Length: 567
Image (tube, rainbow, N blue to C red):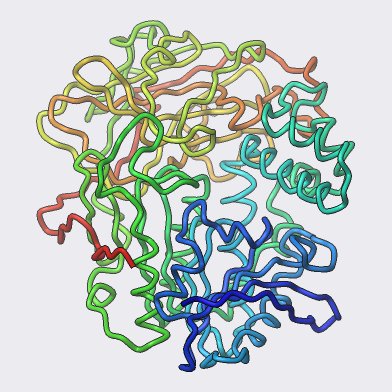
């Protein structure tokens, strides 16, 4: 039998924080699992996790808490601002609950993932391990912005959700109804597209406005992001190939491997931010792709809160789902080498004919170029990937027929190609405006002509970053830009092809570049300019994609990295 009760703690500054507690009806003292979240504790992240009652049935006290100013907790909600001190107070409180043995672990994804890191940064003695999923510690580079471009779709949707919840708590029906309607059809076409009226009217103090204003990694972001100096805990890191925050998950894992003496374990499935199921986009990855994270977390907590040995965590520390083979691959560390390079080659018509642009293992001797035009009246639309909803892999063969997308396709592969790890594109490019965007999508071309995306990246280029971190060719007017793609693990079968698609927009995943260098929150729709871009390849302009190619014969394979149970 599981007992549920609602209780509260009073923080050091006198604010009441409410929580639901689930525990087995036994006298034995048990470890505590804590989740701190801003969406109303009754939800308890059941969009991806088992219900707290299930976790309690595994022999734990489970505490689901409303953070300050959310749910029924008192105080004012200020994004991330109070999570360090409130997290520390909460951990000390739950460690001393009746029936608690004083050992605390935390779990949760997204905002709930970050509340773990904030709390852990204060080094509470009772906190023994955390399981952060789908989050980032660098809030500028891996959450709010990507490649210098504002993550419009993700940020605006989240800001409206937060604002609507604030209106609901205040009982403001007008604001709530307006924001609810906006959430169902996000307002991307207001006079200032990146700064919609609904949010300015109903939540003028939203974090969204601050994030727009701070478009460089300045002191604002340094103060907001959690500090890692004091972190040294066992951590189970969880990510998804099509999750918006995958870069953050992997960067945090790698940073903790460097800093921490405690075990760090990474698992990445073929999942979007939510849900964590077998089908993402239009691709079904099979039963092995279905989430087993609840069972895995219990095994992790049993190891570090109950001192139960588990050989799973003593072997390879990285577990990645390989799309295409539908296998789980095991690594001793994040895969980083060797690299395989494909160079761009063209006859100048890669935006018009799919056989004009080629990916080749050898750099062409002569310089070549493809010219395409970005028209803000009809920007290239986002399709799947990690920064748009619905996320995942879709057939983009029709999209690639647009004349404002240049495509480069390899010959059919002579053997299976296994990719795992980081991917990047280096492009020599010029434009007729001082600022422009580059969107890069990597896809698998099947023998029937269908084209399924599996990784993408985005870069905003302005005069602010024009002369930093860029290699210059002999021609001083043609610069090389690197676009970091979403990391991946995929098998491209024999006789299939690779394709790189490049465009000047991916809307509304990211705002349309106006070509004016004006801040997003000051740029009117009418000011957007047409931008002509030229992709240079061959000769001195070795535009290319850099792939992390793997030989899996030397790695341990498993159909599934954890045994399932029905609890």
